[in-house]
Image 1 (cartoon, rainbow, N blue to C red):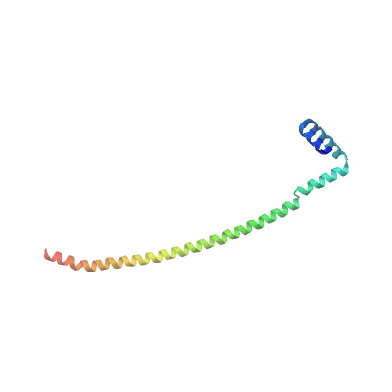
Image 2: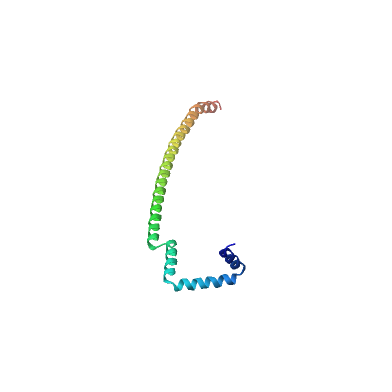
Length: 122
């Protein structure tokens, strides 16, 4: 077993020693300009900058604009389809009214002479 492995095992068994080591390392890093710079560089690679956020914002705005355009196109297409269905319904209603008027006129034409005969007999 290596020295590093034994050290890690001991630090796991004794959390107080691990905290003491962490404090010593933190103090050493804080006191050494080169170590602070290395740590800061490593941290900055993971941190989003204002430029990163601006790029993200621009990307999100572009995507949102695209989605709004897509939504508007879909809405226009649906409205167009609804209008077409409404026109078909209107056309069918006209046909139905025409057919009903024709049926009533035909019934009246057939029933009028019958009704006339019935009334004439009484």
